[in-house]
Length: 311
Image (cartoon, rainbow, N blue to C red; front, side, top):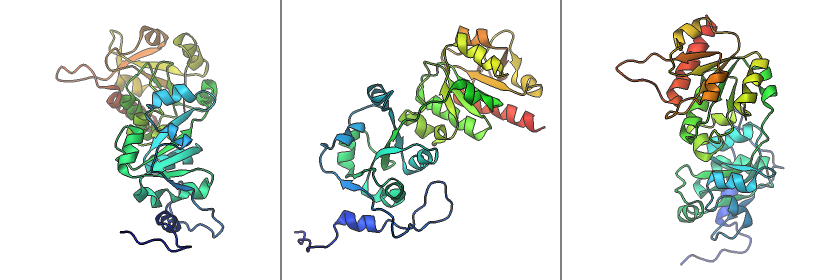
């Protein structure tokens, strides 16, 4: 039998909260020590699913959550302490955090920076029942979805941008963002029917880079093509068509501003995207393989442009 708690003694959760010192803060490399005036973390242990804010996590896919709560109160889910840190570093504001108790120390800074944000703590079984999946990464945050920038503003200071045309696989979207972040793209623009980069799987596959690379949605191609041209971009479509030039040829004489357009693995680029392109580019392949998937193709194309610009 568990002995009764003496009056005034801290609970298990209060003791845990008091031990939240010396953790890493997003955007800092050194350990920091919060001041004595730091507000307490709003830890809420849960043993039922009745709290209204838990609806952000309960039996909702990210797509359903977006449809229900956008545009005025749009949310998205950030999974893992690292992704939550990157989201906050990008200026995004959490609505609540849901985690296993063992992850409390790594997310102490949430309560310090956002004392009004509730941090829900539960055991693994309850978390899985609530979310519908096993939380292997230990933490989820419901984040307020930021407004997307105007495409013209995003293009104004960019030289290399990636355009994702109707890519509906969230894994491929996340992988393309990771390539864009690591290989020098200044922005990513997505078509109206492209999968949501802030879908939980996209964010996870990108290792949080969707929160670092500026991005927005383009209008339909009849307007997107002129928009890119007006900003001074040459539209280069990655496509296996008769008049394609090799990536090496294109990179060797690449113009100052390039918009690299990529389509889905199955259907490739749509005819509207191809009609808007100034040049079609292909990656030469061997052994009868006709193409790479969009995740690999984005990395190859961006690396070719990155190294060409450094010569």
